[in-house]
Image (cartoon, rainbow, N blue to C red; front, side):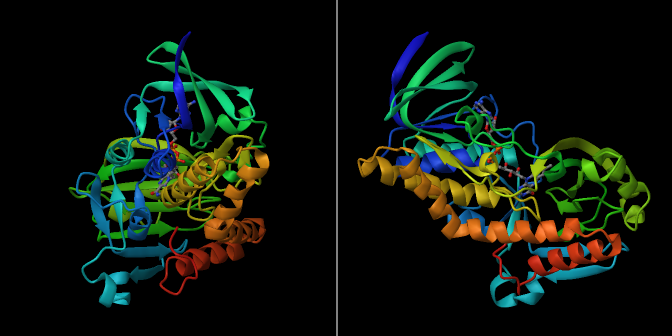
Length: 388
Ligand SMILES: Cc1cc2nc3c(=O)[nH]c(=O)nc-3n(C[C@H](O)[C@H](O)[C@H](O)COP(=O)(O)OP(=O)(O)OC[C@H]3O[C@@H](n4cnc5c(N)ncnc54)[C@H](O)[C@@H]3O)c2cc1C
């Protein structure tokens, strides 16, 4: 086994959470290594790529044409019968959004690569095709991380480890954290990238138990008149899988006429935790960020914004710990979760409580109504939440 030099911070996973954690730590003077097991970041695509404009500006990312596929100006939310609520911000708030988009649909391959480049420009060292295998404690101040890099086993020493390794995170488990996610809180998602479907610069959300039990369906615009048609279902609420519901949406729903000429260009899928944030997101010398910490909006399933925001919080926090000369023991690291709670964790907990209230409702008509009203309100300008 070869030996490598020491770092202040090693980040496992270079999605939006990991690349942003690494960038903010390096910008604040730390020596950072960022590793990802993939040889091509963001691939295969397992994301629709909708992200708000403020999510990017919050972490100083410019909406570059390199990764933006199309601008977004608002939403249409449908109830199960197909009755729409239009929330087009060009009309609702023309002073702000007549020319400036509310958000974007991004290409996750190119977006993740751009975030990595920004991290590298800030001094982060990055290793692709490098899988984290485990961790050993050397002293209260030092961890040794075992990696497989391009087929070779290597190890590196670091003062702090950040687990940004996504929904199936292992890093938290290595430190004994309760990271298990219940099947009843994991949405199974499937989407087709299609052509032949007209869109109008709006994210379309279809609600209703018959459409997507436990979740919702969507049509998102992409570039070149392409679109994403997809949905997420909770498998404990139905015998049928996401594929069956997606086919039903296309062939036998209020959208069928509009979707009848679609051609499927790509099929993408993945799991989205519609769960509460982890109760404990840190341990001695370690913290979790992004999907790994369940930093996902439990109602919309959106996790890019929260991954970026939490990455900035984590990167700055770790820099404060190291530069302050503190031992990063559990008590010291607990202040990370406190900072995260103050900045956005409390909103996420409120959204989770609302989600539980909706899906614990046994009367399906009432549940449908609650979800439709919650999402219509959430995406409206009157919402108390910034769109996360
Ligand atoms: C079908 C679908 C559609 C979605 N649509 C949207 C959307 O439109 N908008 C939105 O905001 N969110 C969406 N999401 C959610 C969003 O994709 C995630 O919340 C977001 O990617 C989380 O970012 P992350 O950095 O925490 O994790 P990830 O993006 O999952 O990155 C984790 C990284 O860790 C790496 N990794 C894992 N284990 C190891 C290891 N042992 N060693 C090294 N590397 C490792 C992986 O290779 C990966 O690159 C969607 C999800 C799905 C499944």
